[in-house]
Image 1 (cartoon, rainbow, N blue to C red):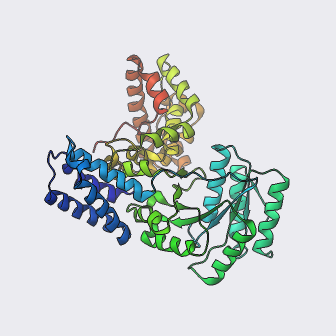
Image 2: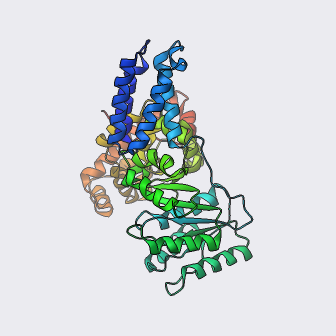
Image 3: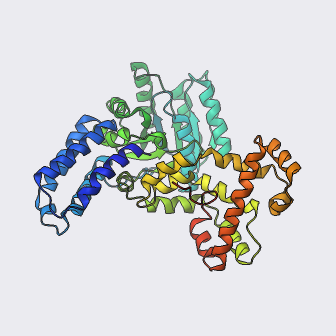
Length: 455
């Protein structure tokens, strides 16, 4: 996420942080590079101008000049202003209304509204313990209604039945009445989108907004569209009383233009970021944490929260005890570890959140094929329980059967077995030193297959 911007800013600011004395010249030169990096990241020009102006004013003021470490103080100024551009203090979803609290999702077609509706429902049910009802009023795309029904079943959240022969406002009102009678805490309304901003779409969404009086009207936008995302959000904000923005596909946005432009242009905070394709791929937006990540300083708070949500600590404890008792680390344990890592977004996602390791994430992506994890799981799943527990019994004919069953080849099977042996050897050493339990409990067993790649 924001790899290119993070790399450029980190390189530009690193030397500045070491300076014992700041001058107008070296400040101007640094800000010139910062400006260029932001523009190349597709950040809107007015936002770039305002950011650079604010940093320059503070950098030339007493706050920095009076510091014993002006270089480090300059970095703090940049981080502070970056947080301000991203939105300042984190703003949570406002559900302080008489139930059901209505959340209306608006946006262009293809922005990911339907998937986001399901992700938000999952977030509210698991993290906020809310009873949620979903409804699609996109009568123009029956596939959207079917998709929402499928996702609702997947996350075990109720979906109000919709059919394309109904009027959007009628569907929305009936869903709200159902949510009221059945004591739902939240009603999430997935609206229709268009390929572009047009009057008919805006009139329909505006009418829905007036009929439902939602506590939250969230604009869902694809962050991959850069500053166009911010401009489209502004067009919606001119018609709807938006209360916030959800950026989708944020993990694919290497530039960061949308995230850095939306708040300033619309005046509305980013409340969530959608990452990945799974239904739990929604993160609350924290400007301070993202600013830290962009500047290569990591984001340990998000990493810890993610670990608490996604790691199976019972499995980690079980493996730790097993290894410490000398029972070994078998292929089933190895598979569990691969799954844990995938749940956390893979090695690159982990390293980006670790202080000082952000740039290493890109190197790991280049050195390690993340799809390799899936192939390795497929190989292990094609083994019998006995083979997973005792890999030494896997001979040539068994390898051929496993390769055929997993859709790979014998070379891939050999690679998995070799990497497992390396991991088992490492686990044995750590276990003897007494650090196994702490490592497994703290990280949930997360390690890249075969250890860290050689970069």
